[in-house]
Structure formats: structure tokens, C-alpha cells
Length: 444
Image 1: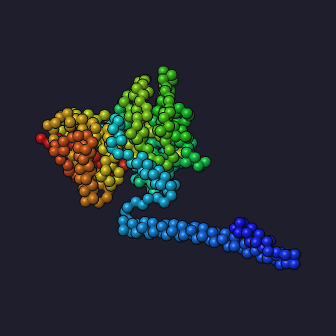
Image 2: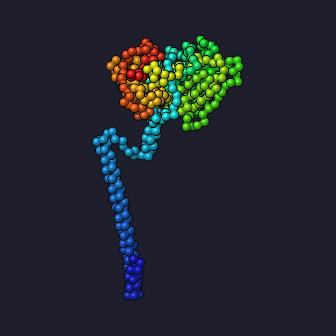
Image 3: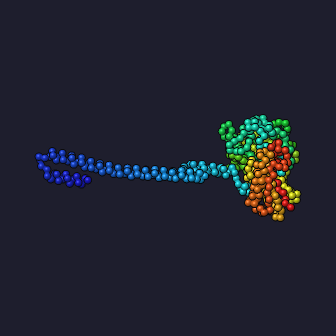
């Protein structure tokens, strides 16, 4: 463009005379203006062309997004049960976290493969608070603080909820022999400061049999399992009887993967065999203390919860170590209370693993023995529903023995008698727990 202007001006200069300098000046201005206008027009055309391309890309992208969304909506309408791919990375992370949480809350039976806990043979105390009204303090307990019965949308059943530095204890003393087990489900809660507060579960040999034993080491002796405010499990055993002051033990679990978390449910089990104490959290053995009570005269008789915030339920104390082999092979009948189900469910709970493993060992070592598994329920609910539930539970027990413990299924029959043949009145939680059982009967 500059070269063209130069040639035009040069040609004009060659033909110019003194008389037409003014005309030449006007002509130069005109040429300049037209040249600038032409350049500007070309620039504008280039800009318009670029904008047109950008606009086209935007329209195409919007059209593509609409098509993708329409297809997603169509997939949702035609396949309502199909999981949709999250549209945001954060949503995907939340979904994954929820799935992990769900898996942690409902572990499979196989996740308990190293679980050697076997519940006591006979239930002597049981409380799921089903006899208590929501909002009331539970009938079988006493306190110098406070607690109330609650229900939640996350955890079925009724729970005793507490948030205090005081204690809640079993009102009546419990006669405990050398061998017994204590189990409960517990959910740590946030305290008044909106942070996890921890809690303490304590077995004691009471001094004040009618009320509260005070102090940091209450009673004649005791064993406490505690969750500290940041979730770490710890224990302490102590003996206040003469000669036992130096026999106490204490410790904690430093594995952060085993720290309890707020608003998650844990199944706790304590197995006491004379001086030996074992503590289990879900499928993990936390502590195994062979000489926790190395002194005669130590006999626990009360359970209490204290110093924290939590919900607790399904509290079960049972005595005696089952002699599975003798009962099943010699006597021909084994009654077990160590196979667990949720209310009105037929799925075997994973904390049943130790009991099932014990039974399967006897069956696999005695290949010629055939058995019938019979399920029983308590009298709550409809008779026909209970009968059906008991049959389904017996079938589920067989399935687990065959699938997870390699027992020959052809040697096992199943049946259910519902609430028939009760072994105790259906009047208290403890008696109802006796009626909820699974029997193994040797077939001759």
C-alpha cells in the first residue's frame, strides 16, 4: 500500500508546475484519506472475519453441550436405576467418599477373617432399650448425670445418648464368673463445643452397691476402655484391693487408622477369661492383656459409661465359653447366641465370624456328621412373619458356612420355628435375647 502511494505521488510531481501547487496539495490530501480509509476497511473486514469464527465456535460448543445434556436426560429417563457420571469433579469425590463410608459401615463377613472373638454361651444381661420410651432415661440404669433414649435416621433401633462428665451405670449388680464377654454398639458424638468428646466404658467391682463409686479409679477394681477426644483408643486396669495397687496396667493404640471418628458406629467387644482381657473394635483386636487382673478376689459386677458424648445400644453380657465340639458331637445339640442379625433382617452380621469359624472347624473335622440348622425369634411382631424370618435366617447361616468356610452343603438341612419353643418369657430384653437363637441339631 505504501509503494502504491509513492508511485502515484511521484507521477504527480513529474507533471506539476508552479501554477498548480495548490491543486497538488489538495490531491495529496485526498490520496492520503482514501488510502487510510481503505486500510481501515481491510482491518475491519479482518476483525469481522475473526469475530465470525469465534461466534461460530461458541455456537457449536453450546449446541454440543445441549446435545450431551439431552442425551444424559434421555438416559436418565430410560434407565432410572443407572448411576450417572458426576458433572463436577467435586461431586465425584463426594460420591466416592460416601461409597467408602458405606463400605466401612457395613463390612463383609470376610473382612473379619482374623476375628477370633467368640461370645459367651448364655446371655445374662441385654439391653437394646426397646422397652424404653424415646426421651426417657433407661429403666435398667442409674446416673449421677443424665442420658436419654433417642432414635436417629442413620442407625436403626433405640440408643442411650449421653453428653456429660458424670456416669451412667447398670442399676443392679451383675454376677460375673471367671469367663464372660461384654459387647455393645457405640457412636461417638460431638460435645457442647461441637468437637468429638470421646467416652469411657468401664467395668468395675463396686464398693457402693446401691449407687455411685467416685474417683478416677472407682470401686475395688476396674477395667476402663476409653476413646480420647481425638479418637485414640486406650485402656487402664487397676486393683484397689490390698496387694493389688502395683498391678495396674495402661496403654493406648497408636495406629491412627484405628482411631474412632465422630458419628460412626463401632462394635466393641471385651472378652475376659480370668486374668486375661482382650478388647476388639469391629474386626480388629486392639488389646490382649494376659495378666490384667493378676490377683484373686477380682470380680467385676457393674458396667458403666461416663465422661464423654456417645450413643450406645445392643449391650450384651454373656457368660461361659462354648464347648462347641462337646455340645454338637457328643450331646448332639448346640445352642448359639453368637450369630447376629439386624432387626427383621436375615443377613448374617460380620461380627458372627468367630462363632461360625468355631462351628465350621468342628464340622470339617467330623466329615461324617450331618446337622440341621434351626432359627428362632422372640415373640415381637407377627407370628407368620417371625416364622418366615427364622427360616430365612437358618438358610443364611448355611450359606455362610458353605461359602466362606467350605462346609459341605449336602450335610446341612435348615428349618425355622419362629417364636415357637421359647426358652424364656418374652417380657424383658434379656429374656427376648435368649429366645433369639440358632440351634445346630445332629442328624442321626
